[in-house]
Each structure stands twice: as C-alpha cells, then as structure tokens.
Length: 339
Image (tube, rainbow, N blue to C red; front, side, top):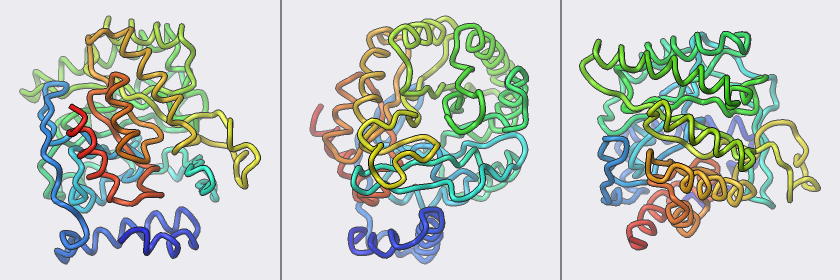
C-alpha cells in the first residue's frame, strides 16, 4: 500500500509530505479505516525500565513533536510511542527548508531545531488521546536558553510531563540546537543528571508513581566518551539510554544531492555508527540499565542486529519514510523469531 503512494509523497516538499501523511493517517484512524491497511500488532511482551511493552518496536521522537497524532500512530502496531522533542516554550525552529531526502542512500537530513508548540500544548493533546499504551515524552531546552541554564528547561519539562508520561526521554544529543551536545560532556552531564534524578525522586513522591528517565545520546562519540557516559548513567541510576540520535558525519553521502546540507543525518548511513555505539555501551553498562536502539533501521534484519548488539528495545523513524508502516510489523516479527 505505502509503496503505491510513496511516489506521490516524494513529489512533495519533505516537510509538506510529512504533515500530509500524518493528517491522512489521523483522518483514516478517525474513520476506522486504518485497520484495513495495517496488520494486527505483534505480541512479544518485554519488561524494560519496569514497564511492560507489548512488543519491542517503538516510534522514535521527532515524528510527532506535539502529540497531535498519538492514536493514529499507535494503530500502526508499535509497542510504544515517543513524542516530542518538546521545550518549555513554543518555538518555530530553524528557517525552512530544513528537511531533505537523500533517496539514493535511504537517508534524511534535518535541521528542524526543536520546532514545537510548547509543553503545555503537548500535554493538552496527550490528555485528549485515547491511547493507553506506553508513551514516552522527549524533552529538550529552548534555543534561546543559555547552555549554562539548560538544566532549568529540562526541570521545567520534567515537572510538566511527569504525570502524563510512561517514561521521560532527555534529549541532549540533537545537533540542531547550538551547543546542546556539550551537555554530554563529563562535568555538564554529571551536574544535569544529578539535578534530574533528584527531581524525579521528588515527583515520584508527589504523584505516587515512578516514571523512568532515559537519556538520548549521539552516535558521534568516541570510545572514551561512551565509557564516561556509561559510568555517569550508572552512578546516577538513570533508568535507560536511547542510542542514538542523528549524526553529523556525511560519510557516503557527501556527493549526493543535499548531502552537504547542515543538520543531522538519519536513515541507512547512521545504522553502523549507531550499532557500534550500542555494542560498546552494552559492554560498559553490563546490564546496569537497558538500551533503546535507534538509527538506520530499514528492515527486520536491521532491528535484530540492534537487539543482538545489546538493545532491549528498538525505535524507528526515517525507515518509515522509505518503507512505510509495514516496517513496524516486519521488525517486530523478526525480533520475535530471532529469540
């Protein structure tokens, strides 16, 4: 089905196609028509971060930044949905054009810049959704918040989304917010995690429930950085780590149309970098906390590779741009068969 409509979508500007697809899915779901073009979700329950996931295949953050399409996306067979990245205040993101397809490489470059309607708007959308499954909410800092004040934005986001999230993802690895990746450094990360963990403990008492924290990291880390991050995640008893975000590398796409656009590269070219980070991270963590593997999943085999490298769960986004929603069931089935 998706392969029949993909040429029409690819004839549109990528950002226009993005919202056209989401709005079409939302309309189809409201009319009860999505069940005719999607498969039944694969049942393969996993307990991760103390949560029971119906299957280990999730939607990565970025597709639904404001939580406007939760019910439609859940109907595609995901075991969990992650929305955001959301910031304390609404912001427009970077100037357009800011989203580019590289079809020859099955890749995407984006420099969206955390465009979103703000955390209060996201929460309103979450309250309206009927979805009762695992919902991750991904939080970040506003572009005009100085990096030395970044923790303030993350704390605001954590307090606001806590009671509405199954888990909260801390995005410190987008390449499209100036200096954000600086927060992955030793002293900066140590201080940030210390504050977030203390706030999590307060909120758990306040709301009478424990909501796990997962930190999302970049693929552009060397072995020493991965080792240091793993040690800090363990030290602060963080509940999970999402590996990885998009890459700044242009290896293999530099000669393609749009290959040298600024922004984060996702899709097939990031697959091996992401898997390598997962593999080393798994060795360093030694089971202390679970890994959610994301980056370059375009087939069931790619998803299995992430699990075999040490991930407990996987997420996808760019792969769906090229393969459609059929990819969800393919990956969930492949992982179940590979047990």
